[in-house]
Amino acid sequence: MLRLLQQNEIATREWADLTAAVPSHCGALVVDLALHYAEIWANFAKLLDERVRIEGRRTDEVTARDV
Figure 1 (cartoon, rainbow, N blue to C red):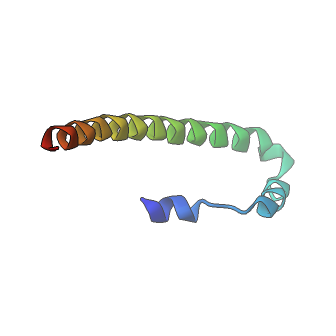
Figure 2: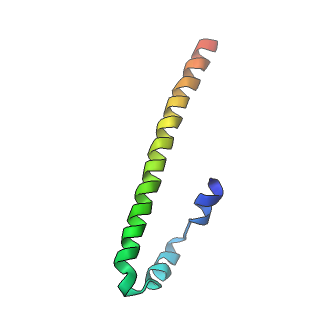
């Protein structure tokens, strides 16, 4: 998972080059795809955050009981 996230990391200076490489007739399509994948990643992050918070509470509860 971390490798996948790291492969998609782009330095700020590369964004200008990347956007310039998109032909104008494909711009709207690329925008739609980028927004779609951004929504998918945001949903993934939300689900993972919820799981981490729930597991964190369980870990805190177990630690509190053990003390």
